[in-house]
Length: 442
Image 1 (cartoon, rainbow, N blue to C red):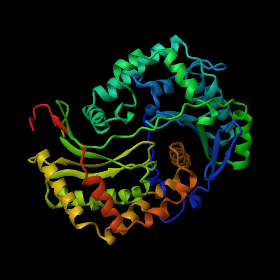
Image 2 (spheres, one colour):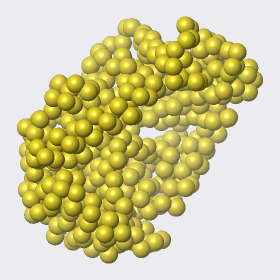
Image 3 (tube, rainbow, N blue to C red):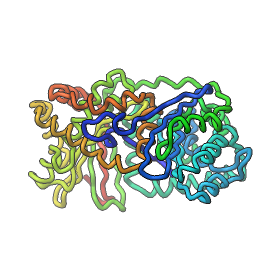
Image 4 (cartoon, one colour):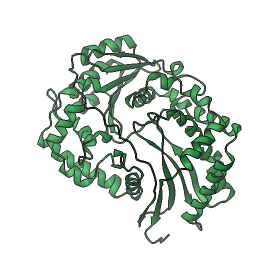
């Protein structure tokens, strides 16, 4: 039910604008709720998603885990539903449901037969404004969340390293705090904290409803007016304009654990996102990530795994779809007989070569084709349009930003990729991650 992140880049088909694929239609109710509809008649099903413009980054200081805790409790008692009844109704009607909390947003969705869409809207409208938080629901759910943290983080060396790396990478931005929260702060959250957070952010004017499937847009708009239209808007707190200070230091975060069987190394640097002032650079960085890390054809894999034979894996990734700063990562895992230092040295050599010589236009054109071609499978899914549109709109993008992505990335040049690489990868700062077996003293 947790931590689902969807990126726009891999969900678009080659050379086509999003309108040619999804043809989204949108309407805003008088109370501020935005409705987005994608008509897809391939199967008599529909995905109904409610995206709230609030996530872990919006939690008050000292209240980490609040957004995720509330997500759990949204399945409990409301004015007109008993605890657990929401999920029971979805199941009885043959549907599937889930929810997710991210740093930037929180979402809830159901996939059901198209005829059940009115019922899903009625249920979501009910819990949007009528949640009733009771001790008999809150306390058991706290234990569920603490167990989730133990199983997913405390007992997972890689996840613990990720937490430490985020805390080092971001000096000021709340991305440094884990979505699930710190254990001591989860234990301290109370009903008043949860109620205030719910009443502050859960409102029609702070949400986007995306419907994708066997529907007609005008019918969905009328349905949304019926079920959501009478909900009262609320005054939403102004988001904090978080800014990272200038980066001067470089950090190494190392974790040793007896459960680690494969050592790994990576480096991360803060990079612009789609909401940054320098957001135009993200298209070049997307292409750069593929040139360096595009599977077996990427420079790092080819150099470290194929040519030198010192690594079992190597690559790069970049995800710019966030309200706050993004980061660019390179990584590698050593082959037996080689060390993390061997991997680090080889990666640095490849990056130095790229920064010195630049990339070629042929590399850029092949990378653009690959990132576009990787999206073909999106056409086979009835739920992907709801996911990609919702994830884009909820972080502040608009439909045209998504529609024009293929054209914008197709215009990226070799000079732009080289300049972006030099600005992000050659600058000061960043975090180096080292995951090692307990007995390894490297």
